Image (cartoon, rainbow, N blue to C red; front, side):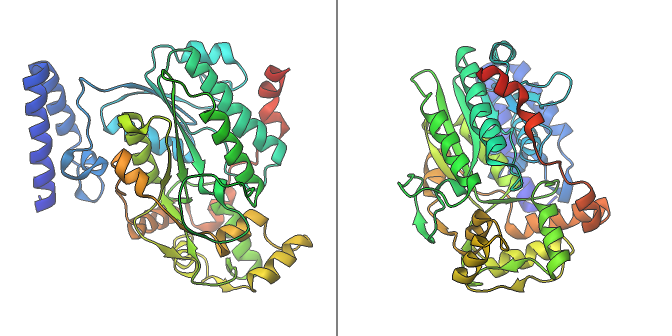
Length: 394
């Protein structure tokens, strides 16, 4: 057992002892059983150590909450579900379209399912760049608002939603931008939808209902089947993922394990109420460095040099270039201020960029390579996926 593992386990056992003192032997024994069950995990690190250094990320079972996760079978939702469970919370996992899942158009049914829940992490939705703005609007904005209204009616206190840094991505590069939304409209339909979703949710806040928004950058990791297949198709058709403008332009990135960790912190931290937070990796990545590593993980050739941002925008305007949002995301994202998440959530990334890329590459190889990833791509949401939401709106 390494020095770090010894330190983590000693600290975790200290938490057990404190729990025994404060809440009795029975809860302490529960902790001991959990620690014993989790003693072995990937890369030789105890599962509970990934939630926070020295075991501090694990909550005491006396303060554990009942948390509902929407979109639990999806990419982000599945990681959030595991992160919450590893911290001792009682997780109710809901996935749309599955038996026992949530119907985002049935407000009464949603409220009934959420009674007795302390917090909700809403990870349902889509990150598909190919979905129409109408479908995105109904799924992301109306769907989120429906779940939030139902949660508020059911007496849920904390409501965490996963959003995107595209919400404040305009047509010029950002420089250490804070979470405050500007008057400049987002450059992409996905950004406009993210902004509208955030505004709808924050507007529902009250003393007894606490919305929290987590804005993630470019989310990557094993199991991502929405955007990654598109990059594979682009690389296959054009000889690599195209770099836009300056190769050294900064791209905000978020490993999915870091996002899931932040979601767990967001339901626990008292100061998180009504907050909006940038959730980012520790590393500041340039476009060429990030997409170089990403291409290797996806088993693609190295990225290829594109034209200037001005020329690429002209190509987009004439319908032969990248989507405007993707264009700006690659070539002019800039830098974001993530200090608020650190100060108010206690957020520190738990997975490095390098570890995240290794995990992504391992997963791609395990499914049979990049061609298999394209075959496993999630279907693009269409009008059929929003029928119940539209019907509920009248």
